[in-house]
Length: 389
Ligand SMILES: [Zn+2]
Image (cartoon, rainbow, N blue to C red; front, side, top):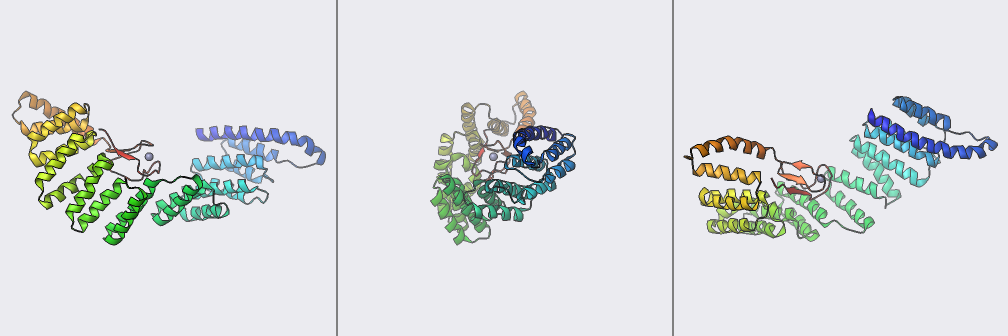
């Protein structure tokens, strides 16, 4: 109820502003005998403050004539209902506003946009798309509607549509978002790979690199494409490119990369790659994964030294401490009292590591156990990073 109360106060403030302005005009209007909408507004505010939203809504809808300066009151009320998830009420007030014949164009556009948001929030995407499209047809530079259409297209995985709307956004704003474009081409490439349409995947990846040559996901998918074609050497080359692009993303393909090296029978080259990449790794999460692979390739003894070096470089990394304790236990089962301590510590470390989300959005802080190329919270592309755990 607190939101309603705060929202109500806001409306009272706007309402009094309106009445004050109205009062000034009443002085003139009285002489001309013009009717005012004030009583209906007062009635609406009274019901709102008494937490009677339906009666408040009826009173506002009863206002015979919506003046441009009172449209804000209607819009604020509509937003209030939408925020509270009362979609029927929000829709009623916005539809009513749009039906007013005297509404100036820019205010009608704004009300139409709000109506689209109501439908979108209610999950009626077809209707939302219809409203936003109508708005953009009348005003092709109406950016919020173009952005809403982009979001709907992406939600529906209509990638061609998403690219079209993003092009329009770029034209309005005067700047492109190359990584986002590239990641959308990657979505199409990934879908083509799933249905083993390799030619289509290849074509999309070419466009992805064309939009942004530094796109890591394009490299990941290119490696997977080559792997599906049975060309492990090319796959390894594609994945190795990630070390120069954005090394921490290597954790996403490390298992596949190691498997490809094994299929090629190039064990020595694999060990060299793991050691060289470890030496350069600045991210503890990547370090821990590389060390775990190295332990499998060269034995825990040698890898333990690597993890010790990593711990010195990244003190306080739960992932590295966990790896260290695990390897140390494997190597020295006869450690006596020290071993008992490790037995006690291990479950805590495991719990601590299990509770960590490996990826987090650099823009909004959203956390996820797996990589997502579009943040589900702030809806931005390419913002999830490997966490320093
Ligand atoms: Zn985010």
